Length: 366
Ligand code: NAD
Ligand code: TYD
Image 1 (cartoon, rainbow, N blue to C red):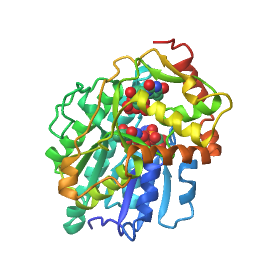
Image 2: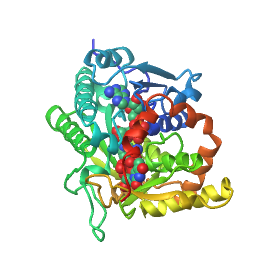
Image 3: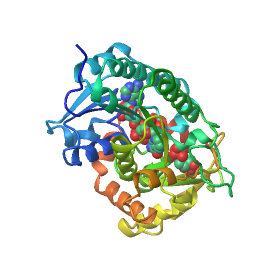
Image 4: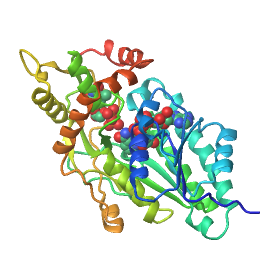
């Protein structure tokens, strides 16, 4: 007998991370969209049960503690939960860590994605009729696979060539290629999204914006790499999650969609804005948080600019960010971190201080 998906069941990998936990909250708020959501997560240093604590009582939600690199565990999840779609967010995601410890990136991002694809493909091949037709494998990737943009170059489109330059970006590029290969070779109905830098609640303070907030409050120097004039295109995390939900509902199988905020800023501009917001919301005696800004030794191979053209997603699916502007989003975000200092303390326990020491203590000035 062919297997049938159970109701509308969504399998999310990496749901205890930054984007994953925001995605789960949004998906569970979407009226009657999913009858069940399974969150498969290894709980690495970046995956925190604190991020999904609010979901524990929801009968539609369940958590599976597993590694996407474990073929038996992953096949077991497909057999037991019989999902109608997969959103693949589990990854090693921090560029600086990939520079110092690249192996984990190849293991999870490349091998883990292959394990997941193989399990998804076998499960999908066993389906029939509308269950088979409706199945989707949505792979969340990054704009970093396209490499570094020249200052005046037009933003990345879905046709931009792949030119990854960090071990993180290279591992994500490899995973994207595998996902497309499973579409071409086996017919698996995949979707790919390549998104720009996300910001918002529940981001671990190893990434720029929450790190600045935490260091500012601790009175530490605010480490801006190199000349601070690298440009990123920032998107509020819930707007990325909305794009993922839209893609699941209406994206064309086999297609790639770029997602971005079209809000380009230099790192220095972001840092100064965070300082301005902190000055207003948590003034410090005797000066501005700006006084803590320090230009430090650059990240090796630091990509100069990313910018994303999200026109295809806007035209085909009517997506648009709900957050009015980056300034509004930053203001919401800084306020959230100030209201969640307890969460910040919890997620920066364990190995966090070891990482901060490794990446910053002997960095030197630029
Ligand atoms: P994150 O580091 O905050 O979370 C990653 C999650 O994956 C964690 O919960 C972790 O425990 C889990 N995980 C890691 N290895 C695993 C494994 N082997 N098995 C099972 N679970 C594992 O990452 P994020 O910022 O939420 O990013 C999520 C996805 O979105 C990633 O694929 C990333 O490449 C992509 N992305 C992120 C951004 C961004 O700005 N953060 C932008 C574009 C794309
Ligand atoms: P990050 O949040 O690590 O995201 P990504 O590398 O994926 O873009 O960094 C965003 C930008 O901020 C990037 O250009 C590197 C820079 N950066 C700093 O200047 N200082 C820091 O301490 C960190 C973590 C990042």
